[in-house]
Image (tube, rainbow, N blue to C red):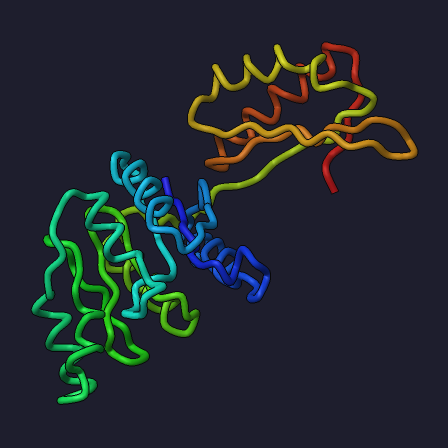
Length: 246
């Protein structure tokens, strides 16, 4: 399961528009993968630490964007260490990268960008050689897209090639006419029980022609096709008409 954390008050206040979310989806989809969840977080250490404590306790693969610089409003490195219960320390590989990029000007401030939670692995930064870091299955990247996106690709292709698929998950659906969701709940539950590896969704809407429900399934193509056929038959058995989604 892949998750994303996009950190920064500037996103939540509207000063900047988030560009990461659609790119994350694009990079995962290109490898036959999908994003399961995403969160926007403020530059608030307590909140960041609380969220990271929760996500580190799970097996999710998480990409975090922003807050790994050395200015006073950058808290992600410190929060990650606190959530993991480890100390911060200067990573020797990060030290070499930063010194190679900045020389004597790396000190005393820039070198702080190489201070990571103990036990971290660096993520190379092809833009300016100031690395990000990985801790367990969490990967911490800069907020700048021109840096973060190639770094995310490097992580996906270096650490998770075994998860790549030439057959990306599909999204299949029908549009059920004049039905309420409550009338389809038993059918939905039966579908979930039969196909637990898939994700079912139900999106109701109201149109001039009446109520409509986009009822569908996401997941592996062959299994999803079977589940969609089950839904079609079930909807028909309940007496409702349906159309293919356009």
